[in-house]
Amino acid sequence: MLEYDICKLKNKVSTLNDTVFLIGNGNREFGLKVAKTFQKTYECIVSQCKPGKFANGEIKIDSIKENIRQKDIILIQSIINTQEGNNYYSVNDLFMELCTMIDAVIRGSARSVTVVLPMYPYQRQDRKDCSRCPISARMITSILESLKVSRVIVFDLHASQIQGFFSSTPLDNLFSEPYFIKYIKMICHQNKLCDSLTEDGKFGKLIKVNNDDEDEISQTNSNLIDITESSNDLSDINEDTMEFNRHLSDKICLVSPDEGGIKRVIRMANKMNVQSAFIYKERKKASEISRMVIMGDVKDKICFLIDDMIDTGGTACKACDLLLENGAKEVYMCACHGLFSGPCFDRINNSKFKKVVVTNTVINDSNIKKELQDKIEIIDVTEMCAIAIERCLNGQSLSELINIKV
View 1: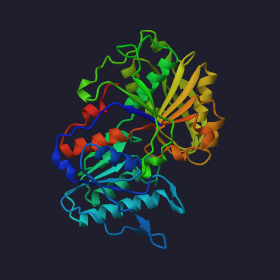
View 2 (view 1 turned 30 degrees about the vertical axis):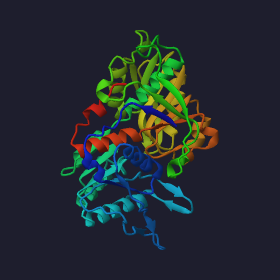
View 3 (view 1 turned 90 degrees about the horizontal axis):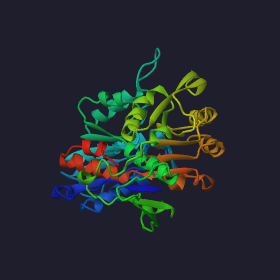
View 4 (view 1 turned 90 degrees about the vertical axis):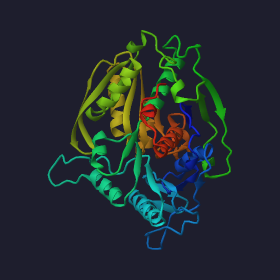
């Protein structure tokens, strides 16, 4: 797993010591790591309460042993199919689990309830694009608002307009872009595509980290890389710390696999001063593509496919083949949410991708098959999540975090 130290928590408000974390069963390692990061700065509590099930499959929340009256509650739940020992939790199980946890803490007189959904559930049906179909993303919004949560924090919404579905509850959409930009710059440095990436001609420090913690976070494997910048403060990060040489724009191309991700790719390309392209695709049905056409020049370039998620991997692998057929030198895939459903692992293993890079919002190293660990990289975004929680509770702006320069 790759760890990019791009920002730090600031211990300024002692009232954050009244924060209590509750972690659901979905990708529990992510939630525990966010809580542990927060604990390094604040004397907060990580609840021992863990949701379970009745014999008939209904969700059961035992009594929360910690005092939560007039406390700021942080509920972290990754909505992803999860196998934990002999227990299997579906997407629907985990969402119901989240709802019961919210109800429990509100009835326990919590001062505020912040819900962290690393991946917003049911977000791919965000509009009525045919007759008699639901807008599932709006339905999830209605449920969360009816439970009277104080705030929702998510990573990389599938469509930005989902934010508009919330009328009374603030939603903060965090971007994984800074991590991917830093990863791409690291690849450029390794391929000697730029003269200098930092002011001193170095790319920070590469440190081999072994995580031997005795708690549930110990799942992280030993090939963890920590890439550390000299600056620990958001305001100290210089826009010119990493800069490409004037020829780099002819060597790198960021590619959106569909029309929906064009804005994301253009935003990243402008920050990096590189070229962009997108793939136009026609579908026969939801999971079957009839035709794909590249709009842009990718010949003799290292291409990075940028998307919010990778699910079954069919579209991504076809896009990779199409880019190589049109002259791309190498193809990487960067996606915030690595769902890896169904045949995805086999498709990636047989694909021509140089690397597939995702964050740990819904998956961690222990979920990756051993033979794929050289082809799939996971970037740790828990520190950004912890800082977003801190800033929300402090009443600070998140714009610095969203627009952070790397």
